[in-house]
Figure 1 (cartoon, helix red, strand yellow):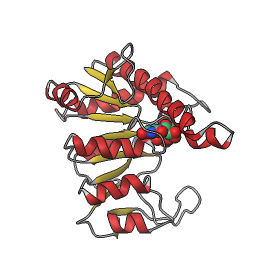
Figure 2: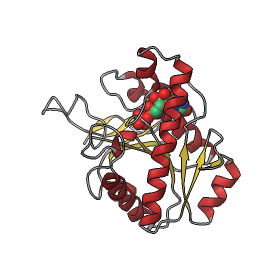
Figure 3: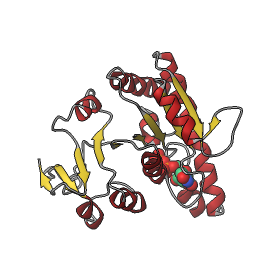
Length: 237
Ligand code: UDP
């Protein structure tokens, strides 16, 4: 399970979708697809609309969240298009019914697509407001029996301090779920999503999708990113 935030699609822009950035992401996905790995992708929508900011501007929270879910469908279509262009067979499913643009999410169908060698993009998160696509990624990872939830971020893993502002920040090589939830200064993903992964033993690999080759190296088990599981000790790289 690959969780890609909407910000990955912005590229050089300030907002929205940069087709060049989407194509480059599709190439990265192709490189791991070539390893005959079954891939499910949950795509975010933060580059277009986030429910929480919409509700701060006066839109009813649930309505704003549905708008956010629609944003993930737009991103999903863009990613589907790019994957097709680079020759990766792909199907998109949506947690909100939208028959003209995507199949509705049906667990058995999603599994069948992967068995047939198709990448699946799961859009509209959980289909329910008040959560984010991180929760969508954890729930889908669990029901599809994924081996790992690969969470793409802007930095290569979890750091003890904010690496964007503090040059002395150090990367954790591995981390326990307990630490990931308790350390408030490190924000791995939504606490609800983390708790779900912890309770159900779904390991998470936090890595940098922007750096060329890092997705492949993470899949190959090289020392990149941060691996979070119940069994892992919290140790710096
Ligand atoms: N969203 C939702 N339910 C879900 C998934 C997403 O309500 O199951 C809404 C929520 O408003 C969220 C927006 O869709 O802010 C975009 O998703 P997210 O913020 O997770 O995108 P990302 O940060 O990954 O780009």
